Length: 475
Image 1: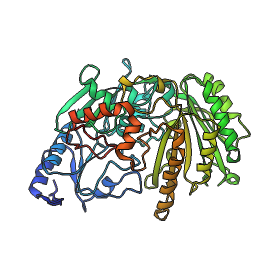
Image 2: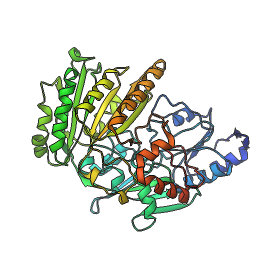
Image 3: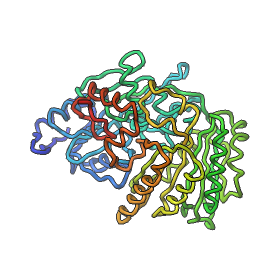
């Protein structure tokens, strides 16, 4: 084992003996700056986030997580928890503190008869899909396969199966959790049901989830998927058409409309590179044949620029179709809010924000929220905002750091301009960097907020887990 060094955090020095003792108690590894592998380990998906933790503990087992929590508290170290490292706001890292990296804990076990899936806190959507699709099953997850299941689930989890089978958090039936005191507990309907409620959409506030148990559903291996681009000059008509389609679409359909510019990629004809588009994308959670019939109207709004629709592999095609649009290291700043409607005034406002986009990689997205998402009662999950029929995503995506200010300003101003059409809730998996603080959390969770604060006081009274969309403990 390599010898580790002392370091200073705030005014406290952590001695080399203590660090080496920590390393000796772990099944996994400890990394410090200037060691081989450190730069790769500290890297997170969003290129805007460039931080240097003093220690990265790469956990191989729940016991490692417990040990790391005790060490962080004993040495007064700021603590970050990294699952997939895919959080937009970069909460999975910090400067000068300790990062608990769950990445090695990515095993997935499937019980096909019970339709239950156990997954480690470091698993990604790709890990989960690979295991479940062997049995013709899927757990509702997000839409980019490199995303970690942990942060996604704890923040909600909106994906291609949402209207039929709910959010990721709605399908969480149990969780193994390491608390701020370093205790290992289980949250389920049978024990610590209050904690399970909070984990279903309340963010990473209440502990480190080292193992998730999900309910799975029959999906695939092939599904009918629509991916059709229309010219953006007809954005108003396209969004009105999309609104009409969503009003009568069955729960098996989960869809969104994206407004952007065609990227200069070989998959698109050169003649449309740089042209504005409106994309209709939709997945049918049922038979391919029925999906072809039900989704066909989304392919018939107008003459498409391109239409990539058809039966597709759920895991290999649908779940990865957007991966190349969100590469590691690009710069991201996202905002969101739930829309009370998609009436003509809202559409006009969306058009204005779309026209103001500062870069060709940025998009304005409209997600239809219905069916199973809206049927879950308040007592079943902490997730806030599920009553709204639509979610608006403002995605600033760009490559050059010189363009930071323009993109961040656009996203902030766009979501501010759309506030009159919203009850104020945000989807906390799409944070820029949560400037709104407690006010945003209150508006997002509404009447649930005080219950979340009481839960935080019970499980993390000193706010050890605060690098997240933070719920402050009740006083």
